[in-house]
Amino acid sequence: MSARLRHHEGQRPVGSGDLAALRADIAQALRHVAVVRYDAFGDMGGRLSFSAALVDDRGDGLVFSSIHARGESRTYAKGVVGGRSDATLTPEEQQALASARTGQENA
Image 1 (tube, rainbow, N blue to C red):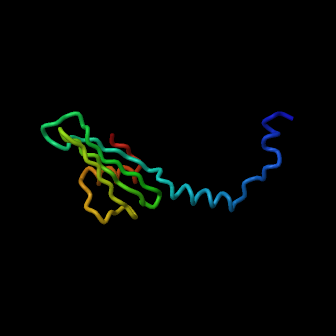
Image 2: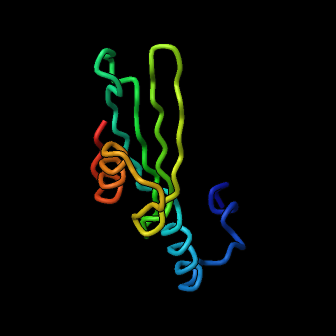
Image 3: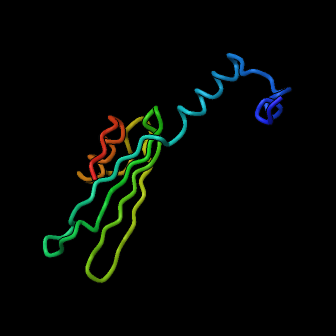
């Protein structure tokens, strides 16, 4: 018997209950991701600022942004439930969230 078969010997097959649990876990994973890069200030180039959205199948997750200025950078995080946030989202954050939910990357 090959080593590969011996490794799997005695393991039980995956049942339908196991598959349902796996599907539920996957649905809650933050697997929809999009990033939008941009220039936060007109006098700076390089698109060093960004907004990123990470959400699950229900649209729950977070949006975070890093705003790069000449002398400093600031990072902000906002929670998202059902594709909406209690905090006001910037246009770039809205774009990242929409792209994550539709599966379109906008780097």
